[in-house]
Length: 288
Image 1 (cartoon, rainbow, N blue to C red):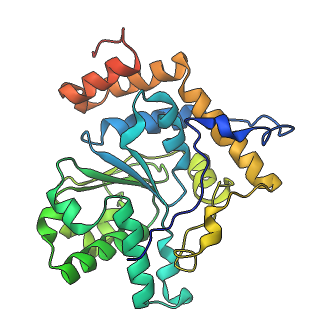
Image 2: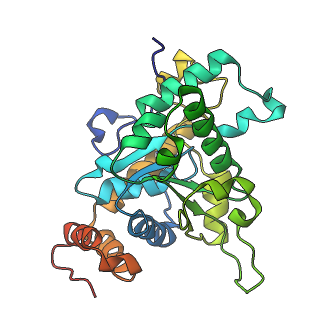
């Protein structure tokens, strides 16, 4: 049996093991916090009470903020997966050994087709999105896997939701969304794709410029043992300081209140599960 593999990432919800790692690291500037709070609240509100999987690394900060804010973050999952490594530039089609390792990794995340088909909650994939290519490749991976195992793909895909975080643009009747250009989206249930736009500078930061705590987890690393070891170079330590500060911000009453108030303004507040979540974040908050 193939053992699953995943990159090491510090547990920032219980950071006792960090020791002196952040000593001497300058305090980060969370200039994007307002936009992050708004985005994170909408991710929760539009999740349909599902399991949230943050694909790749671009939305790590949303994961970290919610991890600090939620009393029970067990439905938050990081899904390290760099699908661009499957493009022709990197060799194109996966080799059988790569397919086997990828499926072992995804199985460890509870994403085997049979598990998807027989689960009870929606599975919500979240990612910063431009063309939607990463989402499309992920859907293709799961579809091909279901075909190979003769799993119930129609049942599995009915549970899948996509939350894209695109760059905010001026809207008009002629504005075209990324999902309108992607042919594979017809496989998903109606209403399965939603978007939460990010201010342009924040989009660029999360997608292209933010130093992450892990390397991109592409096909060349899916089975590499050295990804299980933490990096301690100066850039990673600065990234760690920022991530820790985001988690700590999520724990503050002020941020929890802003999350709750934003969620109160979402249509899903009519549903009991979201009202319960608001009460957990802010016991004295009452839905509008």
